[in-house]
Image (tube, one colour):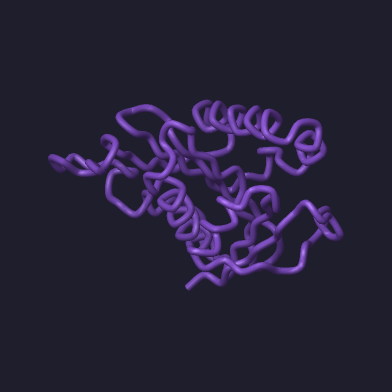
Length: 178
């Protein structure tokens, strides 16, 4: 694969801009920040994601926790709105030419503003930067809003892999990166 590093979230200054009005979109000033799986703000959002899954799906959510560890995270993206961590996501290696999109989450009060799309598009760039040709993901079939977003962004259903093979609750998707 190609070299490692950060293309600064697509902008100079590590994802920040000093230009007046930069990042001002509906709902406050947005800042994308590349980070790692050990970032405390990223981990705090992931804990909220895990709690939401348990609240929504009960004990079923707990069986997927072993597949959602943060040790293999290769790159993570935080999206802050007016300085508040509002959305996150990450990539981790899956196989030679594919990475897996993981832990995409937007706090409920920030949803329907395009934040998930921004995080995913940034992580797609990171996957390319790290030398991956494909980005794959697993989501729950009981989450049609997630499946609709991924489909809109060009992901297509694929055969379930690894621990998700044969699991009727899981929807696996994949996208060729260009």
